[in-house]
Length: 410
Image (cartoon, rainbow, N blue to C red):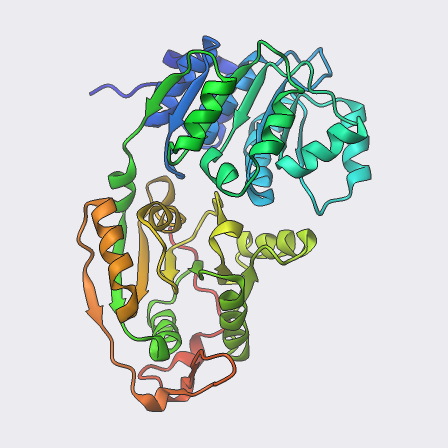
């Protein structure tokens, strides 16, 4: 079967060359379906999981239509988190820096607003930002959205769930009346539909079923343990599997902080990522992780939304995800771009109902492994309730592995 090309979708030679320089030669399903519609000027509602290539599905048509002679903001991309705004901006710059055209700026809180104002004053074509900081610039009158011809709502379900609906509506009111609106979402909830009916014109529905493909590229395992032994079980797996880079998901920032303290005390090369950290700290942590200067990123779901880091070989669900969508989002941080990945989920008896819900949602029975941790390998901590792993009791010589990052897989 002949593979589809970007040229066949209507992407110009200049953008094709920039893509090939990154090793991207053929479109994904969401790109095949969305790009032609966006180039035609249609509004679209696209249901696609993270990791399906949806960013390029809207970025490439935007770059095709940007008038670089006009220094006004012509495209606005709204995201639920700072990290996703930074990531999308980086993806755009990979193309625009090579072509030396189309200025782009990430606009988010926690960053020097005066610096953003100066860059906006010099003129940019594409703004990528979070609702709060975009509104801040609108109220300061430091950004003009009246010439925005393309509006993108990325991870729309997450933005609405986080309570950004009024902010989004206020921002939309500042844009060009006949703008094109592109809505991308992992789930199409009633709130998403209501928003589309209010602000979109005859939107085209696009759905890609790449969930199972994502799952098939990832070796998955459920480790049955108990709450008292969970930390010890995690540490045993880290020492035995020795990931190149791994993300460890916790349900709350408190849980993430406790686990970080325990790992730091045992000399694991780890950092935490959650909403209570300052923006400067979050950016520093992500820089260290992307450069493989730390091996383990302990993250909450909100902080890790949309993260795409090359070289993540393992994902550990220290706390059980709440639903199938969250599970797919988490494990999708590994097995990127056709690479293989490993996802390990730790399940206590109280987690079994959630686990069955997840298995039903992904239409897959996950393999199980029971692990018995002797009580001698952990001690009681009444204050935190989390248990402390005693590395000297491990079955394998784990101490020699700590603080050393394995070689990046080829």
